[in-house]
Image 1 (cartoon, rainbow, N blue to C red):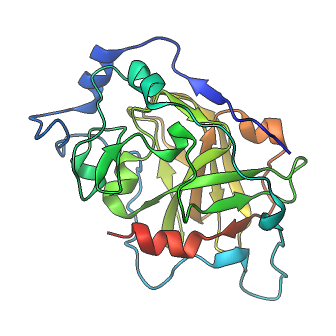
Image 2 (image 1 turned 30 degrees about the horizontal axis):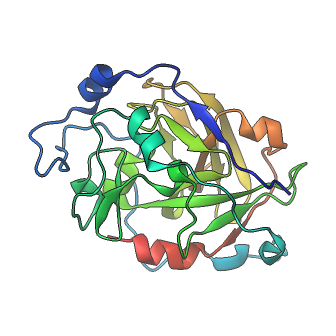
Length: 260
C-alpha cells in the first residue's frame, strides 16, 4: 500500500497570460465570478441529476455478482499539497472569497465550505464524504479518491485550468443512465486518462493520455454512465483495462450532496 502521495502531473511552464485568454474570463465579482463564455469539457449533453443515483458499494443490475472490495482495509490518505505551492503554480488565482456554488469561483477553484478554495484533487485533502473508486480486477487493484461533477455547470468546468493533480485522486462525471458520451480537452492543462464505465460497472472504453488544450472529441465506443478522469498514463501503469469492473464507495451520498 502506498504510504506517500506525490503530485503526478504538472504543466511544464507557467502560462498565466495563455490561461486567462483561454478561460474566457470577463468582469470579475470579488475576484471570483466567471462568465458563461468558458468552454465546456463535455461535448455531449448531460442528463440532469435525479432519482437514478449511483449505486453505493458497486452493486450491479442483473444476474452478475457485484465486484467486492474491502475499502475499510485501506490505509488513510497521507500527505497534502500546500496552498502556497498551488498559488505559485496558478499566478493570480487567490482562494478565500465567499461562495455558494462553483460558478462563483475562478477556475480551478471550487466552492468548499462556502469559500473558494483549491479542490481536493489538487491539495490531496480527503474531505468527509469523499467517494472512492476501486479497480479490483486491475493488476495493482488501485483505489482513487474522487471529486464529483454533477449537472451541466460542474461538468462544463471539470478539471479545467489545473496545473497538477495528486496521483490517487480523480474526478467522476455522473449521469442518470448509459448514453453516448464525448469529451474534449479544452482549457485542460494536464494529460488525462478518461475511463468510461457503464451502469453494470464495466469499463467500456479508455482514452489514454488525452492531449491537453485540444478540441478533439474523445468518445466512448459504447454507451456509458460514468466517466472517471485520472492523470494521464496511470491506467496503463496500474493495469486498468477495458472489460474490467469497478467498485464504488460513498458515491450515491456524494452525488446527492453535489447535486445543484
